[in-house]
Amino acid sequence: MSRILILGGTGNTGRLIAQHLLAQSKADITIAARHLDKAQAFADRLNQQYSSHRAQAIHVDASQNDSLRLAFTDQTMVVVAAPTTAYADGVIRTALEVGVDYLDVQLCAQKLAVLQSSTDEIERAGRCFITEAGFHPGLPSALVRYAAANLDTIESAVTLGYLNMGKHLPYTEAVDEVVENFREYNGQVFKSGQWTKPNSYEVRTCDFGGDIGRKRCCAMFFEELRPLPHMFPSLRETGFYISEIHWILDRVIMPITWAWLKVAPNAVRPVGKFLWWGMGTFHKRPYRVELQVQAAGIRDGRPVTVQATVAHPDGYELTAIPVVAALLQYLDSSARRPGLWMMGHLVDSPRLMKDMEKMGIAFTTRIQAGET
Ligand SMILES: NC(=O)c1ccc[n+]([C@@H]2O[C@H](COP(=O)([O-])OP(=O)(O)OC[C@H]3O[C@@H](n4cnc5c(N)ncnc54)[C@H](OP(=O)(O)O)[C@@H]3O)[C@@H](O)[C@H]2O)c1
Image (cartoon, rainbow, N blue to C red; front, side, top):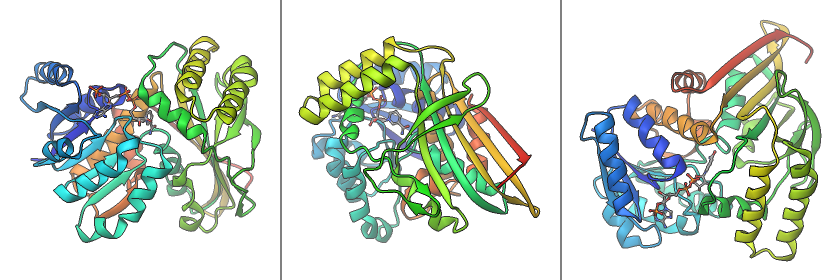
């Protein structure tokens, strides 16, 4: 029986991963967090809800390697769903020492560097390490691969993101991590067969269709995009663009956020609170989180376009559900391969989309004759 420990199992993302995992698989789960009382109460609720004894709780503090070692022992996999990138080195090293598989949902250059420097060790140990799982990062490359699976030759594949839950969300340490990532902002896209410069700033108007319509979008680079032109040598254009939501957010809050971080790079918490207040205050319908790939290429000798969309009203669901859909492929061994993988590169994308739909994601695909 597989045992999966969710580090941060009482958090916004971790709670949903736990629920979907219990509903979709036979795995036992361990809810791990610093506050054992909360973790135990949540595990008890899950056992009641699923009439089982499959959920347990354990105290763990990611800043303490002894605590990590104790928690990881006897687990099959550790799912990192906590804002603990500051301790990534300890978490990764302990997973390797104890001999467990690993998956994280974090976006952090330093974490990725630690993982990449451990690639040989991960392979030698026969461990399966999956990184950058979730919505973004996670789905942009999975969607490009989904589009490619529907084409004989893929020529362009741009992914668009729309993030608008239309409400105040609680401020957690995870927002600090979002703001820390802003300091490493990279707007690279792959255009006319080559990557633009890392400090380039690409803005374009993209048509989402439906009730979102045309939006001004800003490029945002994810490491998972980098190997795509190598995976698909016919690809001439790819990238990720995030949509504007409200003009005050776009033209006032964001520029202040950037300027503030530039003059005071350590003011992460106040900058984060300001940004979170802006996002919770200035919004307008439609409310949901959506990712869309717009691809073009050749199928059966004819030019076609592929548009695939995943959406959910709750962004945490859109983070947790792809993780659990990927874990289903890990649990049945089809995606349990030794090495370091990005989620979007490892999974069977068409199956991922199907399983996500079963778990409540709105998924649509449109394939049309078109210009390339
Ligand atoms: N890939 C994506 O699409 C995506 C989307 C959203 C979020 N994320 C990432 O997901 C992660 C979690 O985000 P979230 O919003 O779900 O966070 P959150 O709600 O703040 O979750 C916090 C959880 O982590 C635990 N925790 C915090 N510090 C800990 C520590 N030092 N040791 C052990 N447990 C600790 C908390 O419990 P205690 O306080 O009891 O310790 C709680 O269970 C973040 O890294 C975020 O950037 C990724």
